[in-house]
Image 1: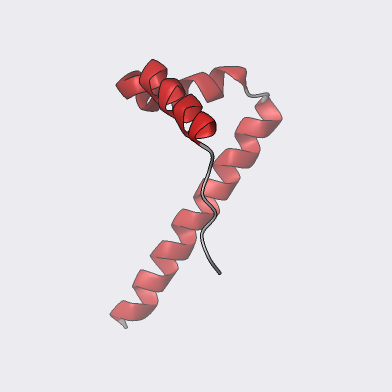
Image 2: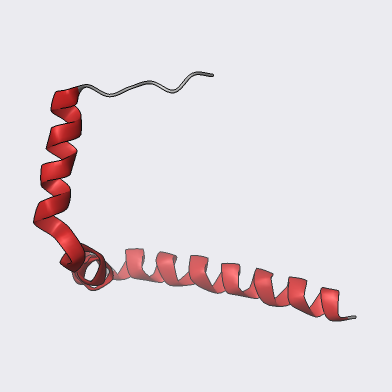
Length: 65
């Protein structure tokens, strides 16, 4: 499947947004999302992370045997 090209206007728009966020966008993202999440959303995120971690650990344990 061929890649679709975006318009020049859209490309410029994304470039401007990227410049506004800059380096600060990344470090603030996690903290900001935790401030705006409900307790239920934070719990769901933590469960998902714990499940992913357990999956990696179990694969590593099986590989070691």
